[in-house]
Length: 452
Image 1 (cartoon, rainbow, N blue to C red):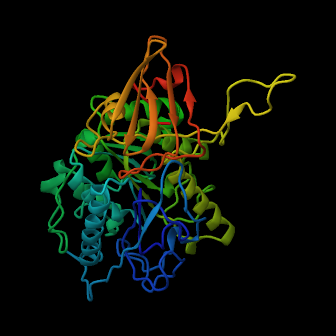
Image 2: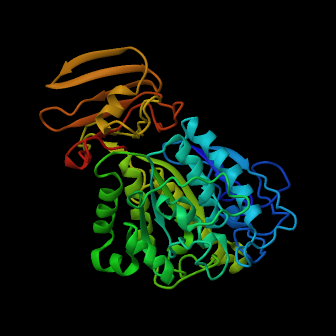
């Protein structure tokens, strides 16, 4: 999984490294790669105020994620356009934002094309113009889950602030193509989403023009009132049914830290009371991981200059937890797998440590096969088939090393075992021991196969 970090916001979660991670736009940096660096330029141009937002650089380092090798692509360098004039007496810094997002789109495109799950760390939410555009070049059928207190779907003609971080979705939505004027620096942007491809969670500060767009352009959204009324489990069921219920496709998960209640995430620029709880936020991320379809993540709007030191650390840790949960971190903790309880005179070693395998689809058909097909088709190398206890058993040596899977048989059971598993080219297998993981029962039969 590549990590992209927004240069405006810092080197990505405290200088940590994430496989396939990119920094979003907006300021130059000095210092050694992978170290916490202070921006030489202020907060990225999507916002009119020129505050030096160091963003997630103050967070605990993300040097590992469950089931992933982390590769830090380093900070992207952006140069502000001199004398970037206000467009139409309204839009701030359009040329700087447009150029930065174009570079970000190219970086995300490279990361996703290389088979990585890409994490982009901001920065403000205007970076989604670049991250989603770049993702869509490789995965044109993607869908987007946007978790935010704000809809960020004002157009340049409806915005009251002129800040582009309140407008990114309008540039991406096909239905608004004739409502969005061509800004200087934005000629490269091509709308890549339709209303049904997008779901909002956590809304509680929506402008009247944004509310009109949501209601009239077939966009599903869940406000905090909806989450209170339905519960987060029902909301996520409806969300995933909308996005991937009819066909499985890659998910772009764009998460603004101000979706959380400001008592949990005070270090952000536009806090709104009444936000997500910690448990609700983690549940959303965990359910996205459980789909097995997560392809890219944005984590934006952490600003350590807007809160006291302890509050900054709490906000940064929260950002890290969101990303880690997207890639398999669970709240149960890591447990050994017990095969039997010890009794008098029995060996004391009755457990083994699990291997969790996140299976990636075949490189020539990303995210377009069923969960079962993703398991049975993707591995490269010789296959050996066996019959065992009514279940079909086969081995594969190739893309992920020596591994074996058991097809769901007449008893509805699946087992996974692996030896020396490593992340493959499209990065998705982890190993915590020489033996693998075993899973039994109905909990494993979620949409056919479930990523562990």
